[in-house]
Image (cartoon, rainbow over all chains, first blue to last red; front, top):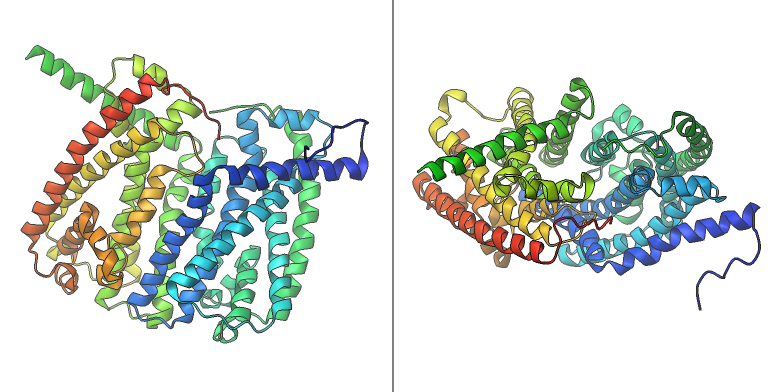
Length: 281
Length: 289
């Protein structure tokens, strides 16, 4: 029996919204698991970076908790990669392949399409991130000392809402871009790993730099998670976990709301300027 | 004789035209200022991650030889993904994005030389990154690089040999790419990511578990990076135990021999993959992953 029942009658409103979310998340959850090589590389590639940075820390005699910082940071890079390549630049790819016009002419709301991409991408990436943490922790003997499971779940959930909200917001901006989209997405990798403290405590950037970097939800999310799961985490944290949770709540609301309005505005602009089907190679 | 000269002319023309084309594709998506910024930010950010990691743990002890080791290794390693991806990604770009690979195949072009030419742009951008990274290291981080002490003949010979070795390695990847679909990962980046771990680019091979070290000893990039370091900061580089028993001449010989082996292998592998791709009709496939 098919997962999606045959559409017998016209739907609209919330029902259509939910069906669209499910329909767009389906290829992310199911389709991505069908390409086995992607599953392998999604886990293997971040692990290679993790291993390289772990060995750097070992070469310079860093405390063992830093190895754990790298493993957790490496797992979180999977989410950033997903947001960057499968959220932000997705509408650009869809335009390249000719699907974007089909989205626009269908009755499905674009916000639901983006939400479907986010939900599906989040779920698929979560499986990979868990694999990275499990394998990395086993290989490098990482020990965790979780101080509060509830806070950990709250921090992770809020980080993901804010991060994918940011992805939905930037997707609408990428809708206007052409060839430069690929370059800009490519540019947002190492610099973001740097400012969000993927491989070291963000506190070491200095207060103002770390504060500016906190616009990227991963910065505070990662910092709070490290404080909650490592024994030395609280001493190396940037702000208190409670403060970081508060800021993440604000970021989540701002990014998701901004995504909604920005998408509507950019879609109108793209239609007016004829950019939905443009293909400047 | 005339035939050989004509073939040389085709090879050179393929290389030069592809270099120009590659540069246009690489740079003309934006204005020169933004392009220069883009070319600088990425490598500097990559180096800054390592610098911060090092600085946090050692309290900013940039005088230590370990810092020069990892900083220079990381700076020159930028050439590895640049050249490997430059050569191999051209197949996907031309086949699936621009859909011109079949026309290239039907033109009087030497395909390997065309692919090498297309990598020149990424090599140039990579060179920007290497120069900027090293300049930042010397100016702000006390990387002990004394220009009067640099062994320039060894440096230039090693650099050229290394780039050729990377280009022929890229040709092997290009051959494999001819037979594979477009994936979300670039084969060049995947391989470069793997080699980063095993070639002692940012930490001495002794840090790796004993059973993993032989992988590093088998790779020419390991010897290339060691020679680059020795030519730039001789005394510092020789302080590390990995290759203390080998002289610069020994390392150069190993690098030349392994590059030659990779070169010969790349010709056979590329020819075989190219033949299979033609046989299966893959030259103009569009996988749309």
